[in-house]
Length: 326
Image (cartoon, rainbow, N blue to C red):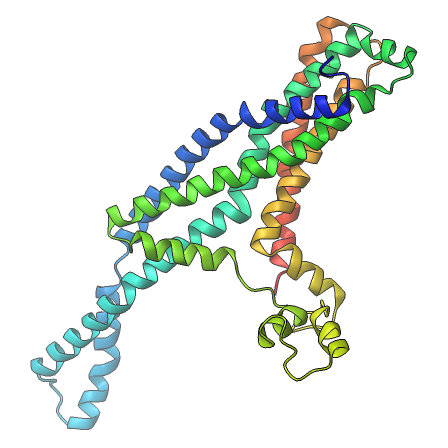
């Protein structure tokens, strides 16, 4: 019978957690990505520093002109030429700076912070609540006691397949939602006159896939992959496996450099959050041995609320870790 083996239960849970959660995740990230992209683009479009810069330039340059020319009154021709030059410089430098700032902001915001957090809060209700209700129902109807009578661990029967399924589904859902939100940004910004889609995608890629500042990675890049670069094989292997940072010999700095890399940080947060959610759901559902069917809704509520609160606290802890990055 399908469902008797652990692999069958794992596949069922994986399809349940991923397929049924995917529309919820995509629609949420579509809305949040569109809102944040529009708000960011509108703010950047409204920012105009031309008048401020011209005022500063006139105030600072006018005494210099008076000093060199010896005239108390600066010729309007000088002022006009300076203003034209400054405006030309600003028109050349400000738009690319706005486009770069917009792309970096979207990438950092969704990859490092909003992406994993929004997904975790949604899955706390969708996955955590579902699992807590399932286990609490088994607890209230003595199914867990029946499994123990048959010599089967209830934790192994329900928690292990569900945990592994959630550990696969959560990162996939987080990446799918984040990718959608970032792609939405490429269509919104040009509508507000902020860069172009191709440049935006390039800046987002560079903001996410930054090079690891590890000596082994640097050595690999300098030696062009498998080329030894004049080194012996042992020296090459040793230099390639050197996980110390390029700016420090401390082991803690190397750990922070790896864990706070945008790609790894995104993945680690997603896995940590879903582990917290599943653990809280498991504890909430099994903490009362004599649970009645009437208490199942309370178990679900407790699981969702407690899991969400712990996820938010864990997100704060990850933010503190990110601040430690050099």
